[in-house]
Length: 542
Image 1 (cartoon, one colour):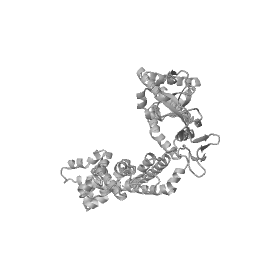
Image 2 (spheres, helix red, strand yellow):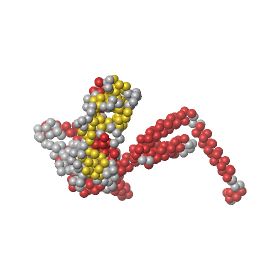
Image 3 (cartoon, one colour):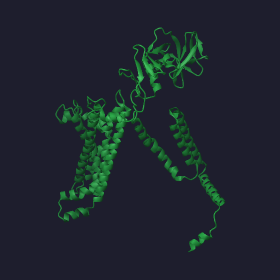
Image 4 (tube, rainbow, N blue to C red):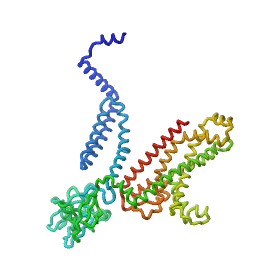
């Protein structure tokens, strides 16, 4: 009764009073922020200044690639400034750093990988079409037979090298790899050679020799038209004109070989292609849609090795978990027996393989498995010559042996803790009911143990599914599958195959490797989801 009476008698709050309350709360928030002290504000301003400077730099660098990404960066920087300069918003102040790092190191990487999977990004297709045109013209350049010599001096500015040349008319010109020749009216001469230019540092003979490879690789365009050729030097004292055997026609969008007359056209897939199907080596990055996924499942020279590697990856992950869990559980049961003496010393010895870095252990085992000089062949097998790492089947056996050595200590520790957590009264109840040791283990201990370690077994499966270090350090994925069109071996698992497709060898196909990565992600996600559902079923049964 009192409540309604008070509500009826309470006077109506006017708009002016609401505005006054908002102003008072705002003033209190600012007063609270000011009470933090000038040192806190100084640190905040300095940190925000660094973030803003980095953001502005990123915007300036990316502005040429379009406006979407720079606008997103600008919006993010503005939002961060609002969050940390406006009083209140305490949850946002704590969440923002974590969200930024999550986006930069996780979400962005995943999104970029997905984007690359739908492009032809790889060897010969890494940049734009304009860059590809310039690269093709430079790669096919030859010295003009009647080119006059251009006396030159090598000059440097901001870490980049430039050619300061004197043309046949006696005028000084300066240019660099990304800057065509332009007049250098302020150049100083010594005889008929320009030797210095204000704002540039002239290299002496010793500096030219020390940087000879970079200087001889320098190609300075004559003009903005790439068909005009470049100036290049081989000795650092005289330059000559070089022109390409290819001619670029921007209007027709074609490349023509001036020696053979063959015309190369844009084939729509990021390459110049002739009528007879020949393509020029350097192309550009384009959107190819699902082509990489189609190649993975339809091209026989890729599909066959891909399926074989996928089957071996599942077999390796399953057998690794099964063997390490079985050995670790067996040792845990043995060393948990109350009749066992000096158990703590044995346990220390058991976990020693877990204490050493896995990649070092893999390298040691690779030496032990050496066919000619390895400890296993020479000592344990009396001088046998077994190709442990060269035979496709034995290489897989070797991997499983080494992974058993590396993985059982972890399972030993996990199962030891799980066994010790099982109440003794449950086991005593089983004995009272007449159950034997095996029955107690099978019907009491093992189900309870499995409920406790099932999530760890799933995580172990996911880890071994992507156990790159062991494969790369022990076998390198070899021996090579001879009929595969991609760089893949018999002992490769999916993750090592992806690495080799992307980063090993002359032909690096980042688009196909990214498509493989997405397939791996989907496989691991589905298996983990189904496994965790089964784990919940075990818990409900328990």
